[in-house]
Image (cartoon, rainbow, N blue to C red; front, side):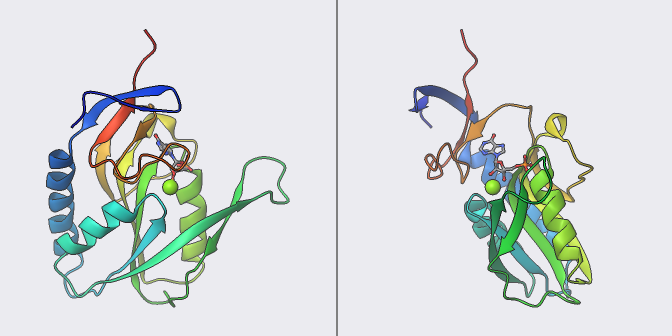
Length: 181
Ligand code: IMP
Ligand code: MG
């Protein structure tokens, strides 16, 4: 792990090591395996950020699971405030399926709130949310994820899928924006 990394003139410092991430994903995998044994879960990975987490988690879950990938498209809706997000690429029929949405991070909760609402309208048998990172203090929506890797403070982080302007997703470890001195 580097002692610091720089992107766009911002400095980031080590926060969660790859070893800690992998160990935690292993635990989540065991938990999900126990909860979904014989339930043939369908993992839905929310691109782009969740791909490293989903890749690891999926392989840590010892069930007959399947995986699908979606993106969320933001556009200016009819509402005057906030962004509306539309699901792109969900070709799988989720009716009657045991679905686990896999997210990289829940910040304000707007994204996951909207997404779960849309997915529930497609009548899954069960809908759970797994997120690698969760900022409880930043929540603006009533969101209660079922599987959380790490609860973190309301700070900007990068690495392991999380980006700054599309960069830094390839960092193996997670780094936090350094406080101004
Ligand atoms: P929301 O605020 O919960 O709707 O989160 C929206 C999206 O913002 C997440 O899916 C991430 O892509 C991004 N995001 C939120 N917090 C961070 C962060 O600390 N680093 C990088 N991306 C973030
Ligand atoms: Mg994201």
